[in-house]
Length: 345
Length: 238
Ligand SMILES: Nc1ncnc2c1ncn2[C@@H]1O[C@H](COP(=O)(O)OP(=O)(O)O)[C@@H](O)[C@H]1O
Ligand SMILES: [Mg+2]
Image (tube, rainbow over all chains, first blue to last red; front, side, top):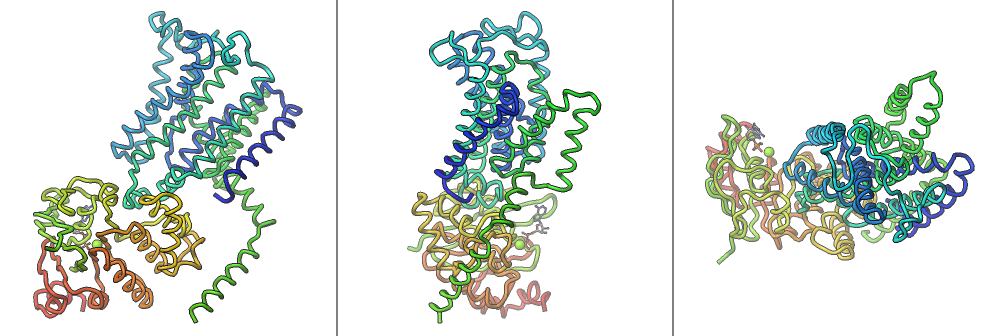
């Protein structure tokens, strides 16, 4: 990655400030909030897939787990701070366990896809079947296909009666996404992140250099799940109800499409892809002429055919061609080579 | 007494009916340079993979500096200070030369020292002019040289190279020879190789593999003039 972390921080701060200012004039904050939540969810998969090479077909499982953890904890505890923390920790712990099983079991990528898919299905089926009154955790009834409504939503930490909702909730979500994006940037610039990219590129080579690939993949997988969990909790607060459809395979597939369309291996791509496609879905949902999934599928096909690297890499390439410092760089290199020649001769 | 850095006892590897490595006893001393030769399919790479943890042998044991490593994984063996280059080029193609070598250096050093070590290796291997280029865009010889950089940057005491000179130009091979000699000042080295000219220029003691077994272990001149070896190996090539 070019630049430095402080440049990242300034970029993220500026972009966030501008978007927070402009976007509410175009789209309602209620809709924007869910776009942010999906952006965070896209980022969670973009991190582990784009930078760690882990293609997870069940990222929605961690999203749903985060949402349910929040709902159940909020009903039992009331004040929202600790439930928010749990919503991050529980999916992370679950992913650490699942990841350890998969990576230490030396599963190939295909099996990894299958297992994450199956785990999502199992969670979906299980939560769906918990309509009966015997399925309770503390005071929270799981509710099966009806979901869990009526839990305490986000409040100012320590003041359970001061709810954060409406526009304020939008600002909180926007700042949280910016913060997560900054942390992801820091992670990717750290040794851990660089090693993760090395593993994405060539696992065997990295292990022959002495890196324990299994442990590193497990950690990265858990970090991705933590971010998905946070997105899930934010979703729960937005929707004020959690339902099994959060765990659905359709949701998982959508996250994958967001990443492809936005651009794998970039930090902004999956966020952009998620927000863009989710907004499109929202617009399409207001009409009944064309089918929603049809359009999403069509977009995916078009991207795979014509822009396989996604929007952000394409834009970056365009930028480089128009404003890049390529020629200057070449002169530098020539000079360097001439100097080398002089030193040798 | 000279330290034994690598030793195998009865190392055997079966693939179904094929015995790729058959009861191999092998010993390598500190700072020794050994070539493994033998016709295609003789079991050199299999032996190599069993030693580096890429495959687990069906029978037998592997010891490194007296520690049994038979069932270790590659990363554990590499972490001991063993530098490994596989037969097929194994590099991070979409990353730069600097990043490739830095990742190798980072395993054994803190980030600042890794930067310094990487610069050192880049200068030593004359990779300065291509340091910022992605590996995928380099010529074959350059990629091989970078991979040798990955091996060297960890200051290994044992280096295992499977066909490092394959497909390289005479000039590249010469450079490779220099690097290997330099590495050999501090490390024991095993080189799996086909090219007899290269072997002659680099090694003294040679181990000949044939059908998974060690056929002979002698000075390179004796090996070359041996009729059995000529028959199984050189005869076929000529
Ligand atoms: N993974 C494998 N599965 C089945 N047979 C193998 C495998 N690896 C090697 N072999 C067989 O073992 C024998 C030795 O192969 P190898 O060690 O690659 O030879 P060399 O490196 O000396 O050319 C060959 O007959 C090869 O076909
Ligand atoms: Mg071989």
